[in-house]
Image (cartoon, rainbow, N blue to C red; front, top):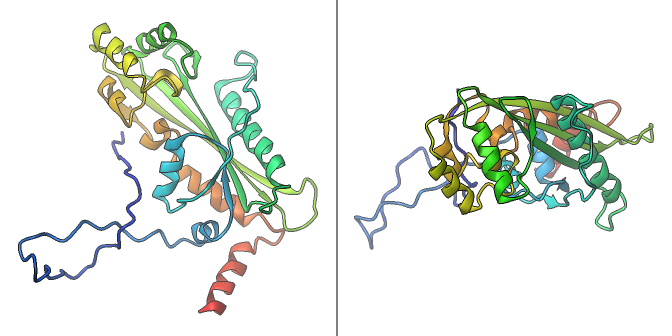
Length: 273
């Protein structure tokens, strides 16, 4: 079970290990809170220094990426319809193919961008699997929304499944010209079976969940509906950070045929110093 919460990345200077003296003009005023330094990881340093495209319009995914220091991705959502069969494919296959399709669609458009080929395109797709194994995406009406929440109000947990796909151009001309890495993460979520219809209707009318798979946002008022979870909290929000970092590192390591991209980036940094 996990109850970790992520807040937006602070922009203030990081805290110090040594206590600072209060300003002379305001001796009783506490110093302002300061955020931590960015993670000093070669793959993230490389991405921060290059052009990365997020193939999603989700503000929540952008906020989660900011937690690991990727604060300014280019937002370019895929506009292709998500029309894969939910019956012919398993839930894992469905969500993985949808995320991969989004990444490939945006990558194909971005390789001819006047701003230059991106260092990486990142896409994700999230679905909710009801206690009766039905794939739930975003509710399409108020009636569908309340029906969706009632279906999740069960002693049996539902599953939130997110697929992440990352694509980067190969340094060589080797076919197909890009490298792709993916992952799929699952979190089990129990709604509070005692939540009343009155509360569910009140939540529907907040409109918080109308743009979210499963019809609720665990990072907001929707947390009131949840009793507990088993797995990654940020996966329920829409982007499992630990798994995503692994995908980013793997795709960058494979980007050139010898796997030396990050080494070259580190060597360039050392030369500048």
